[in-house]
Amino acid sequence: MNDTAQPDQKLSLFAAGMAAFLCALWGANTVAIKFSLLGMGPFTSAAVRFGISAGFLWAWAKVSGQSLKPAVGQLRPLLVNSLLFFVQLSLVYVGFTMTSASRGALLTNLQPFFLLFLAHFFLSGDRITWLKLIGLVLGFTGAACVLLDRYDSSRNLMAGDLLLLVSTVVWACSAAYTKHLVRSSSSIQIVFYQLLFAAPLFALGAPLWDAPMLTRIDSGIAAAIAFQVVLTTAFAFVAWTRLMQTYGAVALHSFVFLIPVSGVFLAAIILDEPMTRMILLALVLITAGILIVQFGQRRDMQAILPDGSHKR
Image (cartoon, rainbow, N blue to C red; front, top):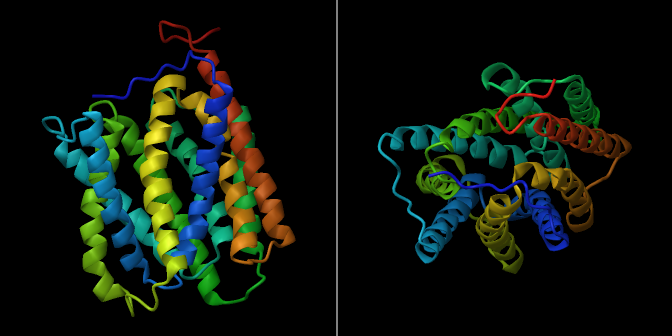
């Protein structure tokens, strides 16, 4: 069963504010991940986060009456998608042990550009127009600025950046795969099985990869995990899904540029990370690229006639 979108409804002031707030939360998530890694190993932190989050989504499905049982023949695609999710998040968590939250916020938000590139070749109806191409160039130029910013010559920094770049490519592949998966599975099923299968894999990997699994647990570490579980996974998923059902993806994705903005500035404020000129330039370029790509997608949607054909 697919989520039913109604993109024809005008975005209300409250809905716009909520969409902006959710995107700011997702930007802050990079800071929360980095902070939690100060006291927990990457696989340990991921196992705790996704294990508890799976419980929250299971409870939400029961309360809202949504079925988590996959349709006939859908368990295997859900498993494939879950494996991509595990690989992507493994790279993210390990990468964040080596690089900064602000750099991570910029590099992981290259996903729309990688997805656009993949969709051009593998998804029918998604083509790179000249406007989207400008957005792609700006986005990848911003990525180059991040990689060229060598405020710290540590090899770990470069390794962390590259791991996050690879994770973003895997995320784009997963998103492209999900576009096919949503035709026969609901969004809550997709996310729930991602969490359900990834959590035990992270738990199994923690004793092998993390050394040590725990270094300290205090109120700050607990708050960072709670933020990821309650706000950016459980609450944000439910709220974003409800907004998409009412207003559609095109209207909501106009706010995704706030994710890297929130991540970079909160990393500077909370973690005292350096906000260099190259990082600021990268933020401007990536944000502008996201906005231009979203504008191009909006124009493409407006050019589609009710019968599915395109305006001439």
